[in-house]
Image (cartoon, rainbow, N blue to C red; front, side):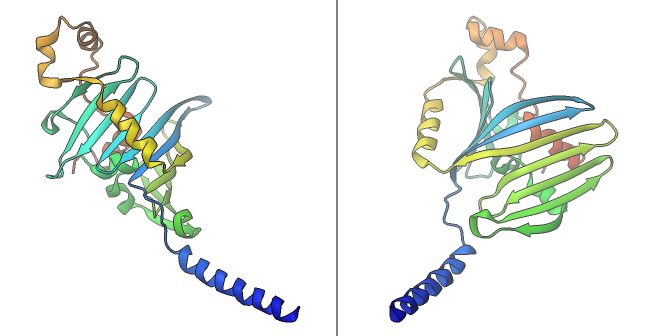
Length: 242
């Protein structure tokens, strides 16, 4: 009995030792993932929220919301080529990198927070190990206080808030769940790829297309800042694009 116990103890020690070695590593492939977020805006006592899904498919990233999906392709020359899909209509508008205003920064698309901003922030504490390691940052600029909790191994925002004392507004981006199912990711991108797309440059020639006519009338065509990170990115960088 004693030898069995000591053998068990030895095995347990060996298991713990190997577990601690693994603890500093992360074997998740964060190149392929689906991450569901909630964006909550609080102004004084009024609150509104919307959902945003971040998809990563190697050198492609998509931000999916209720009405539209913004998809970016990271080209070999480091430029970013965007496509804006309209979910219900299963239609898309393709842009050339030169036609886009706003943050042309892959990190802002890929992880929702620009690396330029993270570099400016102060690391306050690190929690957890391996895939669960979270780095906590804070930064203040003018009336804005930025707080970030970031999964460092998977380059994923756990939570990110911008608190503006002057306007009494708080914008909070919080992660609800994440899936690393590569098959689910690749099939979703394949589905978007089947949507009918029109080049941005050709829209004026297609006014007889009801969908495009409606887009023109709604002013949807302008590819401005979309969502959370761009506005904050531009604010933090003083409007300079890197």
